[in-house]
Length: 208
Ligand SMILES: Cc1cc2nc3c(=O)[nH]c(=O)nc-3n(C[C@H](O)[C@H](O)[C@H](O)COP(=O)(O)O)c2cc1C
Image 1 (cartoon, rainbow, N blue to C red):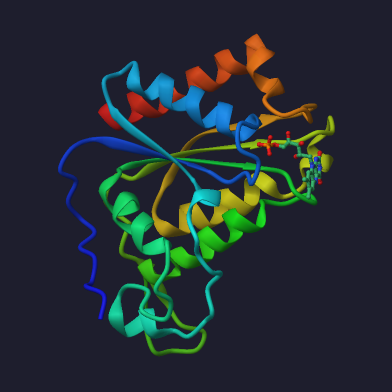
Image 2 (cartoon, rainbow, N blue to C red):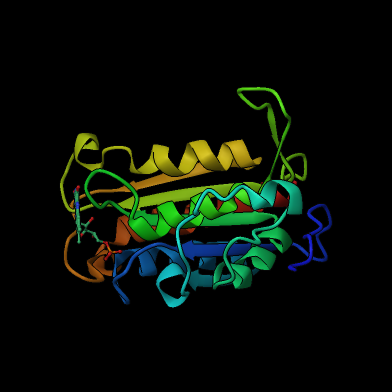
């Protein structure tokens, strides 16, 4: 059986960047890199991962995690990611907009964080997150092809609400519009400067 994960001790300050695009070398990849660059400028260690590089399933709703306090219903790539989440006080989560929403990878990733909740036995069940109360902070970013908030749909909300529920304070949000071509964001100086500023902002907030 998988060991329970202890969730309240950070060995050192670090920020995990999680990219949710299936497209390697695309706009989300460049944004993750740039935001983490801003974080590192404040001497905080960073790591970037891309969900497409991990083989993992969506949550199957078996509820075994309720007793085991870690996902024991699925034995897959998420178990390589859980320790990174636990050990990182800061999180950068980025998704391109796919059909007005986060990508299927990001949705599956968020659902698999369900194992960090503790529930009581009432109906509906009261809940708390075992990641809560640890000064966890996050920034979220979304990138889409079209030009308006409506076209981005619920991409940012779909990350913000669950991360807040898990116990992250959302420090900053970066919506990026009007980009389709792979990696096009790298040529957008203003957006790249904003992404760096978002990283600096997260780092400053973690250091206070
Ligand atoms: C399946 C799919 C669905 C998409 N849906 C939307 C959408 O609803 N709104 C939008 O503005 N762009 C949409 N796009 C465009 C992407 O958001 C855009 O190309 C983005 O820059 C891709 O980021 P990436 O390079 O990080 O993958 C969609 C792209 C794909 C492949």
